[in-house]
Length: 325
Image (cartoon, rainbow, N blue to C red; front, side):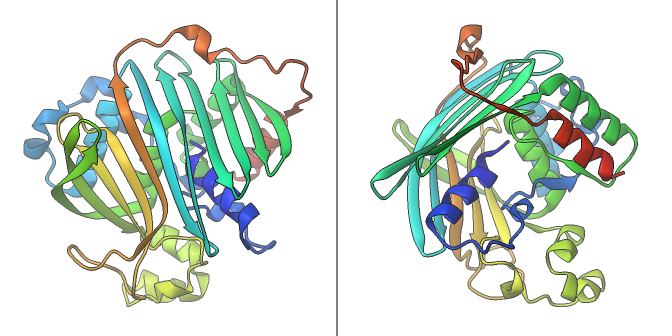
């Protein structure tokens, strides 16, 4: 899903992201370790409410949440996001819709964020055949289209081939794919009961805290690769300023839904443990007024570019994926 990379893009337009900083190092990188879909089959699900009995580790608890989310027929929610990057604090909101279907789920994501007196926005729609992405940043608009069927088939082939990493495509897979990316990139080291405030009162949640997996961290900090591989102390202050050193995930106690995700930067340079200071949130995403398993009108996933010119990104994506063999 595009959320974290898009929010980074908004902040970089308003702030000072260096021109040579690769966008693939967004809070959830564009490329993460591939997780075989078979590990998250809804048929094998242990009901979420039995999670405390079935999950002996925070990582397993996240896997249960992925299973539960993939089994949902539909998701409707509002989105609220906050950014604290490059000396800029930005707040925005939007809507999220997902309707499960085979082979490609329907998805619609709408985000807006205020940059001074101007509004930037994203509309991303997967209609089961194409993935449409319309971005308007500081007045400049662009429209792209991707063949979702060909892209999905190529991604599945990459996973079957056992490649260590594949491109995590924004807009395909929705929230389950976002959680799979977190599962692949972070080791979740603690799970504690907590609460989140909502309009209807407090929501009981599990608060999971994760830190970069060694493989991912070595890619981000190549000069400290040997120390990372040997399990020695790592200076996390050397991470690029827009990257977190840990992530905090809030899963509903009743339904396992990811109500809030925080990409955070710690107060000190070393890794954090349970109960230690969490630093500040670089990017926060919240899902509000969540409705689960209520069918969404298929017409809401229709997209009409209304004569706008678009750039087809399919061949470019397939070439990039093929280059990673």
